[in-house]
Image 1 (cartoon, rainbow, N blue to C red):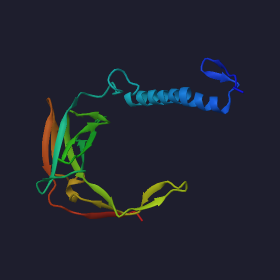
Image 2: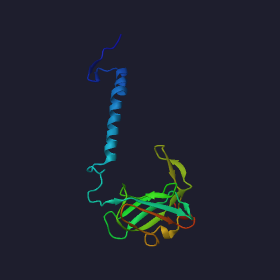
Image 3: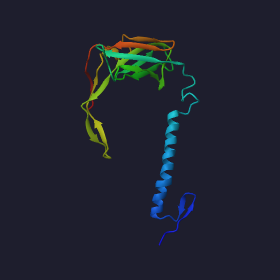
Image 4: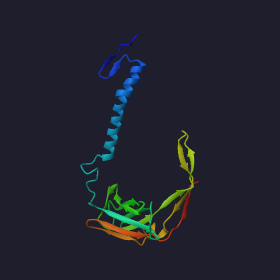
Length: 190
């Protein structure tokens, strides 16, 4: 005998197991998926005015591109940090080098750097020899290993680095070499 189901909008009165599964699959899951997507989009665009959530007091940002080499070859995966020589609210900016050794520097997640004089710090840290383990819930995770620095120490400290940079005008592009290859153990994580 066919079951009679009365609907109010899209939600059935007196639903059977089949109609509940059909309603969830057809109406509710897509609705929840759209709502979740909307929340993600709102969070990504930020809540600030029309400038992508950028703080109103943030100064104009100038595009900065830094090329990093090691013994003349592009150094991929290095972190380039620009530290302001004068106290400033937005005094630190950073970027990671790509396969060509180039980092496009960002300030607090926004492309570019405020005009000013900066000290250039370059480092490349890598965790090696990690092993796979699992959490209490059985999820995979990596543990242990050793943390290594692949750039000479003088370039990794803002007080010792020989490199500086002045950011002004329409954009800045510089190239820095961090000497020969090194591999210094910084910490054992076991």
